[in-house]
Image 1 (cartoon, rainbow, N blue to C red):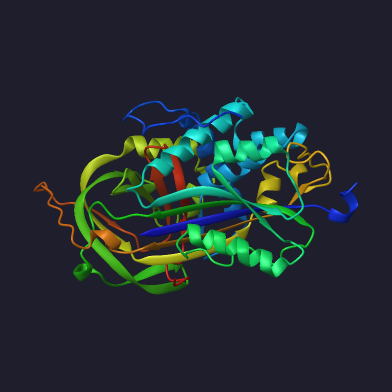
Image 2: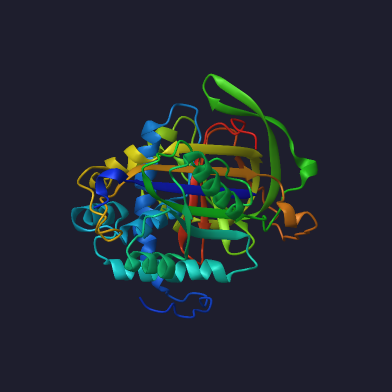
Length: 407
């Protein structure tokens, strides 16, 4: 399974009108169960994840997939917040759920988190940031130091006066970081652009318990009451963390490398009901209620790609000043007036039987004699890709139409 995500925050300036830290500590990998500085981000980021989902879902057309990286979006906005001041900063922290934290503690948390991701060389995961700066524009040294030190940002210059060339350079940067899975992220750049802040998350997961491709078969998937598509349905019986109640069925399917996919399947006709009440409390309750069970799981192979603007979503979550003339990013530049002109994201996901490295894996499980639970994912379902070391939701979304995009 491969998952990729990129977010671009574009900071614009009416350029012609405005012409008049510490060393990074050496950190080792966290001990199992250890409380790390980035764990203080867990609850705010979960709240932010569901706030994003509800807003994005309210704007999505029926039958459309939803998929994004809440951690990636939060990371990019947190990096931007280092340069925000006054009400602009307050609104960003409120929307992100950081009201009880200060910028120093947020920066320190992300510094440790990104260092942990970077130190896990054996895991197929790449999380990072970039900053494309207009040639001739010099951000404050304090801002450059902060984004380098705490957010591991790679900084490079581009000539926004040549927007097509600038877009090509930025897109190449993102493509290189996501192994070519994200392309043409940035389009139609304004020549007045000052900077583009970038965040990327790439994850390739190999099932800890791979499916046998010989068992994959054609099956119907019911997009809605009037639309049915044929999918390649994978099938596997094994021991999984599982939960079922009158509204939902939940399963957690582990990958190698301390990550997993949690799937939530609402009962027939109850997707909207589940979405309306879904929040951090429900998410935590689902996870706590999981019990190891024998499950016959039927999961479609699917590939989705979602590309969307976040401007209205972020404004509706409270970040209004950042996009308007009242924006205060004087922590980035005290001579040039800046505002966010556009926030866009792109995410792709593909799921198959094994993943690249799992083809030769053999898994033996001791199964109980009783009949297994049965979970057939033949209608829309919710997915969460979880990183257990970071205690974070890497990706989440809703698979409504598994054949909508072929990558």
